[in-house]
Image (tube, rainbow over all chains, first blue to last red; front, side):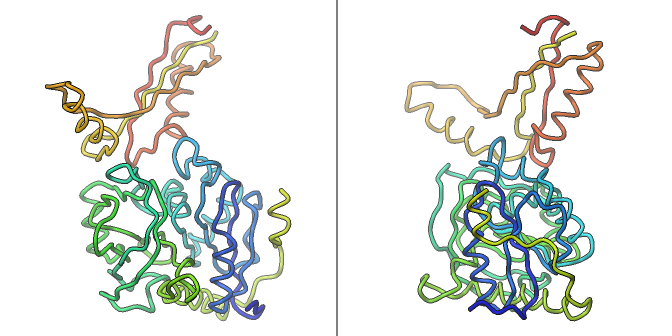
Length: 248
Length: 87
């Protein structure tokens, strides 16, 4: 369950993150050497890929992600994104990446003003990303959502551009939150930075009620493996054990 | 000099406003007729120490663009008061 041979993936922990341990477990389950990284770290040189997990980074004060984007680690996340390394934002992590300008659009309050906590049917809309490269268009996935601000919004021009270029990677089968174009996840132009509102890590084991999330996470891990093989594994530098996170 | 600054952050024209829509839908139930275009925003009040009003505005504009509003979906209207209006 805890292999140390897979690609090294850093999972960022902000004050208020709450899905980091689930993400680490799910990534390890898919063969990665996943480790927590405190948001105060300035380097991610130890990692070939990075995940910004869900939760309420910095309490979601002001707007979800509005303060997290200034955390020291975000400079390193930007560098990873610019280098074409895999970067994934899940739920609050998606909000952080949009606020940081690494992904297009923004996440607004859900239409109907309800906090949604349920499992929804999603559809892979494009394989043009590190998260969906392993899936065919139209693949249906049952994934849990758990958010208040998941209403994907951008201007009309941006939306048609995203669809035209295959940057909309995941859509909802039945729009739960008012998202434009029923968009559940998007990627940047290169396809290496991905954000989605559903939680693949919460659908990564039959005990959790489903395994559909593994299809996405396995694709992400294999994209990270490719980087690992190409560049050699970076030297150990910024590790953070789960115990230390709780203490800080 | 201290300047009192007010920044009003609201959704850009054409960006959906689920809170505004929900409030507007509820109004007839409460007996309010003829109220429309309800938009919900945020207001920030703070004080800026600056040599003059232009400098206070420059700081406030930059603060709004950097932190208070997300330019993808929001606009910020900055109002700088007379010097010494901060209290």
